[in-house]
Image (cartoon, rainbow over all chains, first blue to last red; front, side, top):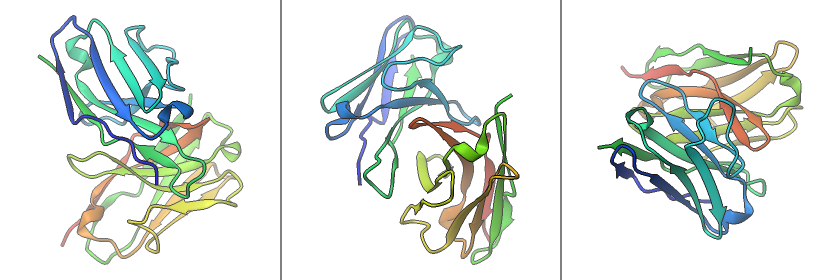
Length: 109
Length: 116
């Protein structure tokens, strides 16, 4: 089945840009979705279909996807962005179609 | 308002059974595929099961295949997960999630604790 690989942790100072990667074989051919999860809360989408933002998500959150790597970028990082971030794709050719990355803990220094 | 509300979690002994429910509102439930996803304490997200809108396609993760059964009632806009032969490692928050395109919209989760 398809595998997504994320770094376990990323640290960034306030005001800087955080970049969280999600690696997968030819992931550029798939739509990638990114979820933010804060302690005690359910995940919520921050970027979907590689680079679209739901209403209410700040423009500071952006996404890209090409080749074997998708990236979630968070510019002008704030303390409130500290959370776990998960990437997800749909692998329609598989009987395990919903695939998550292992998650990345974003720490704001 | 679009809402998914899970219920049915609780404390159960190893080997026991539990049935989770997910009530969906604000969506045309019968037109969407649904999923169950869980998260063990301190761990990442684990997809468990998928059911198509018409119930014609069902998939399970290897970790629960043969023990868990997904079902849905489109007339009641409800999703279910029958969990049998529960193990300690099934302890987790269980989320139902509606598939919109290829992304997920989540409920708030229900905690299942398997312990003697």
